[in-house]
Image (cartoon, rainbow, N blue to C red):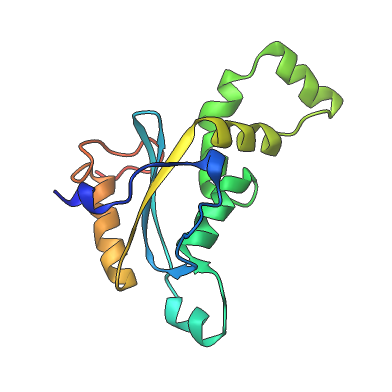
Length: 152
């Protein structure tokens, strides 16, 4: 089964993972417990990045962006903040937003580090990642569509 080709699940709490591929194209999936949240690819211009001498590119930079919790600059973080973090805030937490003692990015990062896991699969070329992404988003690989970015 193709889902067995993916890595095991890793907690963002332990990001960055040791021995993570520094330059790699691939696909990744993000989980909140047993719920598939998000599917995406990374490494579109891998050859160009390697020619430019980049030492980190692709999966590692994309997952690093997600681990940051920055909702304004990262689509996954924005979706997580809007659909999970904000709706779960208590009145006490909302008051901390009002007085400026906490930010949405801080709360999003905290949620990611406490609850979210990822899996990845390194592929030989970006087109393979795109093809696999479509299958994942349609529910064909993990038996469910991602909550944030499904395809019909």
